[in-house]
Image (cartoon, rainbow, N blue to C red; front, side, top):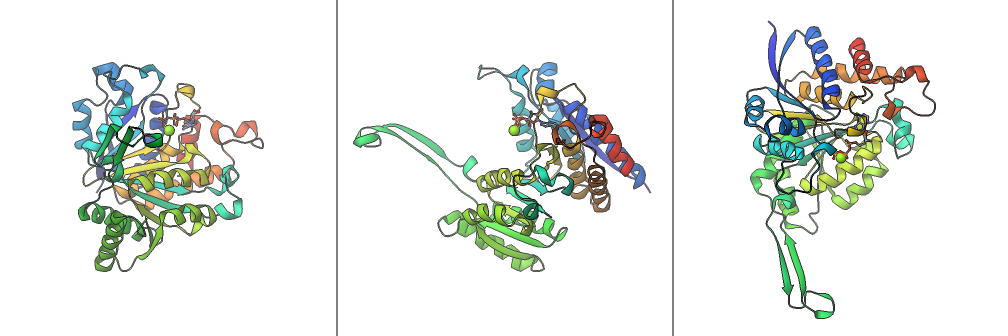
Length: 369
Ligand code: ATP
Ligand code: MG
């Protein structure tokens, strides 16, 4: 019997419509091969939604997302909607809004090196060889959502004891928030190489001591089969550069995850190759890590591989289609090994007849499937 999944497509702005078409192409090929039907609903988000309705996240879009089994997003934003008017709607509000409305507290960022592109890395080939890690970042708590305040004209807060400003932010986590992200990390590790590195600053921060305690409690109770190591965040920053291939799943709080995932992305060296997933308790959202690339929009030259790899994540995490997901990764690897490149990942040695556009790159992946 054919299984059917409903997918909400949010093409957004810039290169969004061009790259999402390639994601759909790959989904259709997977559907045919694995006896699965994908039904699509297009909805508006970002600048495209502002132009059509005046708002970056129309209610109809949220309804369509909630009625689907997964959301595939491309990118939002562009200079057309840049404004200095603080009251004007902005495309990015659509993205933050949908993350919040869908309760997407887990952000997954896979950091994988395709050996054919190892030269693009900022690190040496022998260090990046075999890098394949998943950063699991808590996305709706911690310092970015804590109480904050700024005080003006405080006695002695200025230079030389003069009155000046003082400010604070609050880093706060509950057991509940830590437990649910820890469970996500352990579940993901079970589907990978079975190892979790929990990153904190437990030698200094009380939130980190609670973090460590809860992560171990969840581990010992339900995930003793997964290997668990604790690493201080400063040490992690070093080890990501020294021995990136040793990491499997890295789980951490919001701000540490923000910083470490940007650091880790540099290991692969190519923005056009990185996908991401945001998961909650309901429908999940999958998107490339890069933006809408307005500078190359409409020219058919954007790299669709980050979008295609976000489809891989959707199959794996929303539909339990691990085999089909592996198949996409294999196809992408083969296309790159065969020397095919979009403009952003070509180098001086790439022959001109191996440089392809957006649609051709999608076709090549489908051929290899
Ligand atoms: P955002 O704020 O939305 O993240 P950004 O300012 O970081 O946007 P991007 O849109 O990610 O910028 O683009 C950064 C650069 O990378 C641009 O030069 C863009 O053309 C290029 N780029 C981004 N994505 C791709 C892609 N898929 N294929 C080719 N080039 C890309
Ligand atoms: Mg950016």
